[in-house]
Image (cartoon, rainbow, N blue to C red):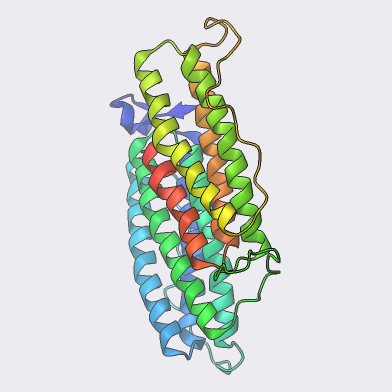
Length: 305
């Protein structure tokens, strides 16, 4: 469902669908909440490194809010009550420890990443709105990564169960969640490869076939190869690989290009959920978390902007 600015149809990109309108409102609402959380953190934090992070994050947050507010005004979307101008407290500053403040920020930033990916996944009408979400999501992931490293240095992250079957001689370690996400991503990519091969064989439109070929060779097979190396490196069980070349048995007229395109888009949207969960949960091995971050932004975001 799509509506245009003030009920007039001007340019296609002036239109927003109902979910995009909600995404803008929802993100601004969450940003206003984050501002008040940050203001409280500023009052109670003691550690200089934590204060520096809070200061930098607040500056980034205010810039994000300004950009979202402009979009709301541009598309005449109902506003949100703004946060309090400031937060004053007479409570003992020792009540809230730096560890408690950091962990609260960590949970907030984890939710922030998932909210952005959900917004990107459901914003398919207006390119400028999706780009706004994408740009802010990249910053959100960087902030989360920076806070994870701070928490690890301080020893404030609870250690997840470690994967026990690392081969002798492998210097790195991963936890059970990271092991699952590596395996889960590879099996998902194998399914994507087989499906895309079939679609390529029966697609009609030349531009669509070019898009499928690019996605197959430059995204799916490349990521699958990277993930295979990681599974072998950490001694994880290897899933079955798809055929080298899948040929659909159905008539080329059985599936229309627009249907196949929607299925491909749905697969990309599903990948966004996998990436979000991996980014949130992979906190033991920084290199593995970086792999999932690269999968998410280098390929998924570039393909949707």
